[in-house]
Image (cartoon, rainbow, N blue to C red; front, side, top):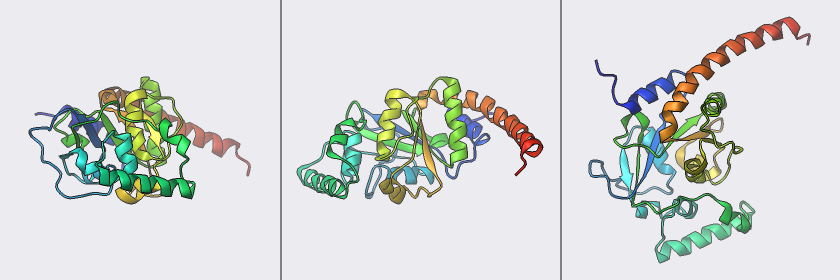
Length: 239
C-alpha cells in the first residue's frame, strides 16, 4: 500500500511528534506560472494572509499583483508596486515611522528575497503539488522548542535569535540562513488569525527530511528528560 507523497509522509511524521494548531504551509517562489494549480481569485490585505488560506486546506498560486496591498510584504518579497500602490506604501510606512513602530534606518536591514518571483504558490504541506522553498509552522511555544532543538541537532538552524516584525521577512531570512523562530507581528496576527499563545517556526523545504529525522530523536529525548526532571523535582524541591 502506498504511503503517499514524500510531503504527505513528512507532514504525518512531524505531526506525530509535535502538536500543531493548524496544518503547516508550504510556500514556493516561482519563476513561471505553475500550469497545474489554480490561481488565487479575490483579494487579501497581505501576503501572509495567504498562509491562513493554505493552512485551512486551500492550494493555489498568486501573482505579484495579489501582493501589492501590503507595503512591507511587497518589500520583503521584492514585488514591484504600481504608482498608486507606491503612494499607499509610502503612506503606510510614514504611519509606522510616526508611531515609532519601526525606524527608517531599520528598513535596509530587513531580509528580502534575492529575486522577484513571477508567482508564489501556497498549499498545506502534505497537499503541495510543488517542492516548497520554505515551510511555515504555526505552533505553540512547546512545539516550537522541539522543532528548534531538532533543527539545531540536524545542523539546519540559522542560529539567529527569534525574529520579530515584520513576520514576512522570516521567509527570505530562512531561505538565506536556515530555520528560525518568528514571534510574529500585529499585522500578521490580525491577517492570519495567529493566536496570542502561538508563534512561527520556518524551515527550508529541502531541510524537512533532516528536521523530521532529528525530531524523532529530540521528541524521545524530551520525554525521557521530562520524567527525569519530574523525579528530581519530587525528590529535591522543598517549597
